[in-house]
Every structure is written in C-alpha cells, then in structure tokens.
Length: 118
Image 1: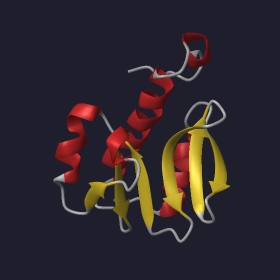
Image 2: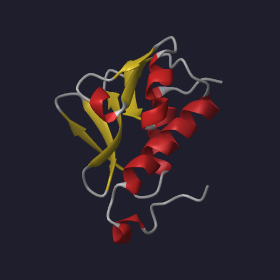
Image 3: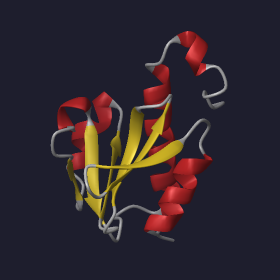
C-alpha cells in the first residue's frame, strides 16, 4: 500500500515532539525542538524530503524516483515526488529514522521523551 501526502503528515505529527510549520511560501515543515527539521512536504503535495543515514544516502538516490534534495543533499536529505516510490511500511520506517537522526543531534537533556525504543 502507498501512503498519501495526508498519511505522511499524520504519521510525522504522531512522532514524539513533532510539530508543523509552513515556511518559504509553500513548504510544510515537520520539526522537533522548535526548529530542527526532519521532513519537508511541498504544499502542492507533489514532493517529500527527509534525512537518511549518511552511509545509506547513495543507495537511496540510486533507486528510481528518489533524488538528492536540493540545498539539503550535503546533509544527506533525499527527495521524492508523488506517488511515492516506496511502500507504506518502508516510508514510515525512513521517516521515523529521519526523526531519530535529528533527535540524536540534540543535547542529551532535550532528547528525553523524544527517543523511540528500537
């Protein structure tokens, strides 16, 4: 099963500490700790970008429909257009991993309550 833009938004907001903002004239930004982004959705609903593990970045962008995210690729962000080229379970797993990658960079005291059990 494929996820829709609204499924993605609902899932992102279900992650610990997640909130959403609208920035840059048409981007839905999912973040934690006030301003630490972990996913971006174009308001036209046609693209989704998020962070991936550094060692898996090249493997992801080799896949059909997945590309380095403009301006964010150096930080290992990927982007994909709708319909998303990944199944729902894989996409949820990658979004959750993006959230946790960002959480892991926060100060230890801020991480409390945001870390998920493996």
